[in-house]
Amino acid sequence: MNGIFYAVGVGSGNPLELTLHAKQILEQADVIVIPVKHANADSVAFAIAQQVADMRKAEILKMIFPMQSDLDYKNYLKSGVLDPVITYLEAGKKIAMITLGDVSVYSTASYVREILAEFGYQTSVIPGISSFSAGAAAAQLSLCENQESLLILPAVQSPESVQQAILQVDNIIIMKAGNALPWLIPMLEESELLDHTVMMQNIGMPDAYIGKPVIREKSYFTTLLIKKGSLKS
Amino acid sequence: MNGIFYAVGVGSGNPLELTLHAKQILEQADVIVIPVKHANADSVAFAIAQQVADMRKAEILKMIFPMQSDLDYKNYLKSGVLDPVITYLEAGKKIAMITLGDVSVYSTASYVREILAEFGYQTSVIPGISSFSAGAAAAQLSLCENQESLLILPAVQSPESVQQAILQVDNIIIMKAGNALPWLIPMLEESELLDHTVMMQNIGMPDAYIGKPVIREKSYFTTLLIKKGSLKS
Image (tube, rainbow over all chains, first blue to last red; front, top):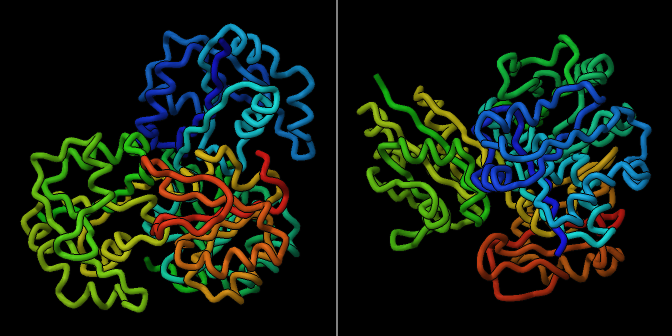
């Protein structure tokens, strides 16, 4: 009897954003998988979850996900990286992998889950509050209403494709925008959209920022919300 | 000293999808506002929240939101409908309005919050798990990965604008798709996207459906996920 792998979204910074389900799964897990950038790195996601979920009984397994935009994660995960997880699964353990935000939105946990499912193991997804839901809530802005559309795209796309995409929808979320601000801000100014844009950084954390898009200290957790209609509501 | 109005997202069907924050706010509220379609209607959102949050001490205030796509909710809300809420706010009460899914995504609670904020009252938003996050989790599919974009749009848009939008992005969520299935299904077939589409209905509820898009009993909670790349992961 094999175990089960849960990909668990823990929300975007505020520990109270954990769902009841996420807390329950984390507290029942035999093993907690924590994704880190390198062997000695800390995990923001674990630090958040730890404040509200008691995981002291579980074994902790760090899994290294290098921050390389050109890395093919699916191939990387098939190269033996998952062996420790598989050993636990074969031993019938309940494994929960923590991920920031929502599992379905640009998360490495969903790659891990997919590969494990391909290998024939039982998997499950516990959804979390995405960074854009948390950001919109903190800014007290709607993401979409009535007949409006909402486009979510990562700033790793080319400036040209971002510019074109922005023209065609009512509301736009640009994720992972931190490194792209030097070209995004002038682009928005030229398109007369800078006054329709809110930058949300480190939402739910002590150094949270909600306001005009400006280049501040680098942060991985930078999201822009562009509302063509109005920044009200 | 005036009270405060919370717009609280309770997730999409599974009571365990409530966040710790939503549970806390609902249990501390003096008044729970429940949106209903007509005076004798029940609230799915309240039925869900009640299973995990103890609201027995709170006063219950039903607020009628007729299901009319042509209704201008903001004007409707300025016509005196909010007077009972305002009376409670003036009395210094904590008021929590329950809404399905996430507050920022097509919710009437965000209109109520906006109007109350315009009137000068203190408001706050507690984000919830959106129907598309819950659906993607249940279907064990990602919404977007790597450089991919995700477009969310309601099927109340015209077939032409939906068709055009679908062509330009990698992943598409079509919300409120129930009534539009008679034209959506042939459109997807013609675009050779039907095999790339999952229909998610009543996720988290006993009669949940995840599978091929088909016309079943009418349901308000019908969401389509179209993944141009592949339905895997």
